Length: 593
Image (tube, rainbow, N blue to C red; front, top):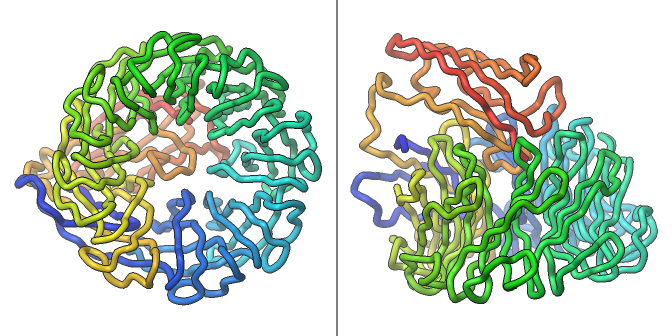
């Protein structure tokens, strides 16, 4: 893996603890965001076209950075510039509780924020039941432009994230117990159904669909497909009626294919007679779907289990046929969290491991982060355990230089963990393509600090979003209770040659423009070495879908203002380096969702 200088922006905590002698670090700035109450970041985060960020969560403060609180918990939306300074902050809600879970930016800089509301006053109108799904449009300056609530007289709960659709509208989804109001595609009486709603650009409902049976269902993702339809990935279904057929017992994984108008094309339950839980899924360029979860079963679709929960990986054809399943683990509990595709057609899995036998080797005790590399058939190629003697939990992201970033929380101060401050720290680390640890940092103060990786920027910087309850160590300016924390850290690797002559130009071969801020833009790496550059990207019919002569400009997966479907594209790069050398590159780029 090519090592390089890297700038890290962390929205919560950072420690400059002991590291490899090859790497030095310098903290450039840090910011705490919040008030004296409870300010908690939700999963809502987006990068903005001006180089800043918008973070979304909820707050019961009415001081510090938070003004205009309506009572109970409000959705808190904060706009940061590229240096982490707050440009504006807006509390949205009414007298009951609101929770923010998603945010996306439109081409004009306006923002769409999604969450849950139980209010019928303040900024909120139209809530019918105990809780509805709430979508708010804000101007680029934070002014409320319009708001809509969606649901019935029961309760609705939004699931991240709000998605743009290729026609300029939106897709939202969540859980519902209603059978009235906006929930018009009724599935009959059930404990809890999953509800999918297609909106136009103005927020009006075009169609809606409930999925489920008489038990409870929990959907976690809606993924667009090349034919204009959608794959709905469920954490579980407890039904064996209604839309659900062939449940194997207890909780099964459930996968549903919808057409462009929301009608079911096919569905597949996956599991055995014990418990399964789905965590992630990807749609591949050939239309196949790979599902990640964990299982306690030893029968049905589960061929083997080494004890308790094992990680479960399955591949399903575009027509809904189960192609294969694989399990990975040891005699204790192994649970999955994150799935990435790799350039060689394989997959990288992030999991948690409590074993030190079976497929798990090199564990440190307690619960470790566990990274597995498998090929396209699910065969295990290598595995690595990261952590200490206490408890670790993490997620995974790919970097632009072909490595991988681990981001999670740790209670340990031994094993792979160095520089631990006390209680829970954020842990940030990079591994190469072979799974070897390149560098690691413990991030936080003496209290609770936790975060989630959200973006790698064009200059190689990394953004994590979470919270801090500390006011020491690396943390200063905490307003009290729990705050957001933004830190910028520069990491310098002396092995990286200083001269542009040896600078590597790297063109990533895959990205996922899903507004998640995780590998959601296609950016050429090594642009600091370029004097001039022309990057052209073509679809399979030869249409030029993107072209740029600015090395800092990345492709967001759109063509003529519309998001493109998953596919393989061809790129041509022509550049002149600062040393006068001419570089010509061409190859494939895979757009995945």
